[in-house]
Image (tube, rainbow, N blue to C red; front, top):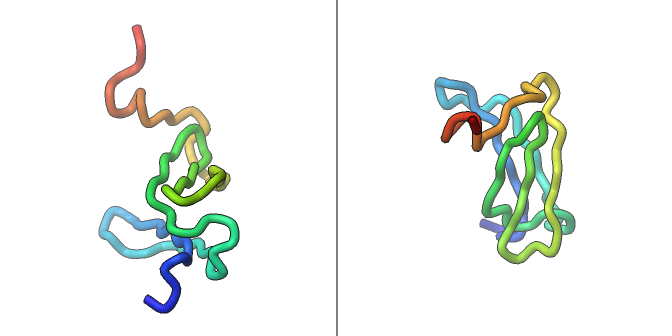
Length: 76
């Protein structure tokens, strides 16, 4: 890789085909993204060397979807 600090997030469909890509080619905002989480229509991006968390609104995403509820069930 010519620049290990390049940030990149890929969006895939169910077949594993890339639908969209988001890049930080200069590595100035979100270099070396190591984790992400979707929550209520927003994708949150973090990295072990970043001093900030990125947030990317996802057009058309379910505004009520919560990963914790999806994985573990809604609280009773």
